[in-house]
Image (cartoon, rainbow, N blue to C red; front, side, top):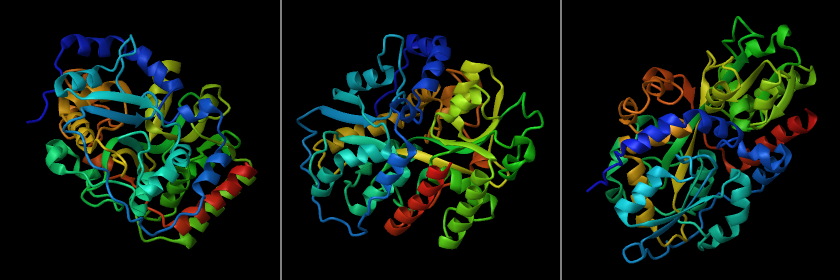
Length: 410
């Protein structure tokens, strides 16, 4: 029987009352912004990503599950990715523990996909316990873990609420049918601009290369988003059916705009500082960040999915081979796929929920958020965004190396 979501009106009121403060906090410590606070350079991240990976799956055996007798769970996640009250408690997670009897150790332990992987890759390769029972990593990193055979199969019988998984996220190329992974939260990459400095707005990636914006454009240091958007603008279907030639064309286009001074900076979440201090007037950006920026710094930026399409990313639950509490992990996944719980979470984190029914549940918390296409995209919006296809190990190494050269030259 599915757990019943919390209905405490005090929790809902607390979410409403402190939303402005929480959004401000998200701006400085967002899921994708935490990297900038660590001072980690894009070069270091790219070098980690370029480490050669074997395509062969390791012959690993899942750890014996002791969930039936040991009601504990360790969960690693990104910063500011859980609903939080003014005292620093996690209301929905507290309710899960009370209702399930499972004691959860929730660790804000993921500062970046590559650095996290670097810490645990040796244990993963041996099928050993990495110190957590479940972790939420970005889909391209999850694809690597799937390829290497480092993950346990999920028992869908323990996750009946998987029926609420949006069809748009149900069959990624790296895990058809979600046998090994389940989405947590997601977002878009698109374009944004300062409405005071660019009053006519932007519609396309090519608009970023306008002479009026020379030296005032920022792009992301996340290869799959920046080059993915450029590839889409060049007519490439980034979900599949492309190779070295198409990637090379996008790399050349980005190199040209860096070399001629059109692009001022290539950054991670620090691009928000450039927008706020007006070093840049427009950028390739992440959707949730612009929602937070407007809530805290003047409401003068606009986000759009380019006319050629945007990218869609997800952070995703997985259970490593060494976890001894898979059923407990499946219980927490099932809980967060209750629409009411997903809505309470989305009211705080402001990213895309993969849970059907959460939009309707959000109407009881915040009708304005329920109408926000950046949090609850409808089918028309989802039809305009695309998931960057999974790269082979060789492609991952070669393309990241090419992108690294551009970063070093910027």
